[in-house]
Amino acid sequence: MLSRLLAMSLLLACTAQLQAEPLIRDGDVTISRAEFERIVAGWSGEMRRSAANDEGDRLELIGMAVMNKRLAQSAEKITEQDDPDAYWELRFKQQRVNSNFMVKRFVDTLEIPDMSELAEERYTTEKDKYALVPEQRLTSHILFVCPPGQCDREPVREQARDVLQQLRDGADFGEMVEKYSGDPGSKKKGGLYDKWFRLGEKGVEPRYTGGAFDIAEEGQYSDLVETQFGVHIIRLDGIKPEHYLPFEEVKERIERALGAEFTKLAMTDFEQSMMITEDARIDGSVMEEIFAPYKTDD
Image 1 (cartoon, helix red, strand yellow):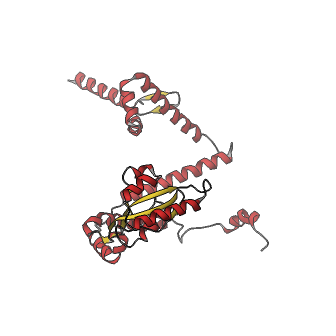
Image 2 (cartoon, rainbow, N blue to C red):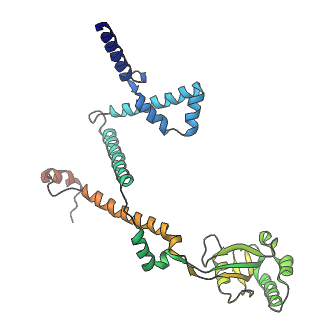
Image 3 (cartoon, rainbow, N blue to C red):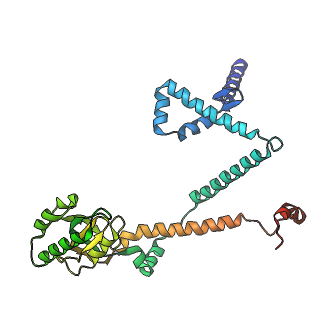
């Protein structure tokens, strides 16, 4: 019985020793199993698959892990006596990393309260901000191509004015598009600019949207509109009136905005709690020595 207990004790001791042994040892660099598992978890999926299926790739990635740790350990050996500039540069960079990490950790672990009731209130008080959908318009156009500096626009304007008058007198728009438009994309669609847009829509030439919104009714034409591409005749094809989205459609967006506001305020309080306190002691004479070289005569 005693021999069995002794054997078990030796086995447990050996197991504990094996568990204490690092997974990787290369000179003064050691990586434990727990550390390496974290390293692998940080790799991309492709890197993990490569290491799992190809021993050559695995060895290369292990080599990178060892190299990174060896470099980090080398940095820790820099002393203020040997190289004060490098020493303090490293220490301040480490401080910034630690500081940013703690702020991120604070945000990641922050519990945001239920914002549903406040969201309803915000929907009522700031409806334009969260729920207003501005008027949108759909148009077709005829483009008389004339880039700036590449042609004389006056003859182009004269031709466009003549075509516009014909359209207002009842000429067929599709026929005019086929005959005169230099925009290949919309020409294939009978002149349709296949995009609903707001006034000042990003990605749409501002003067084009301005001309489109100057038209009073569907089916009517703009005056001549000049852009970087040339001279346009715009026809208004459709209007989606300004309206408000129902609360349920914007609830999630409002709650996200409220959550962001809450987080910002919480972060401000958190950072303030880390500021210097009233109990701090500052050696004024040493401070004067430090700032003496920077003083001016003013």
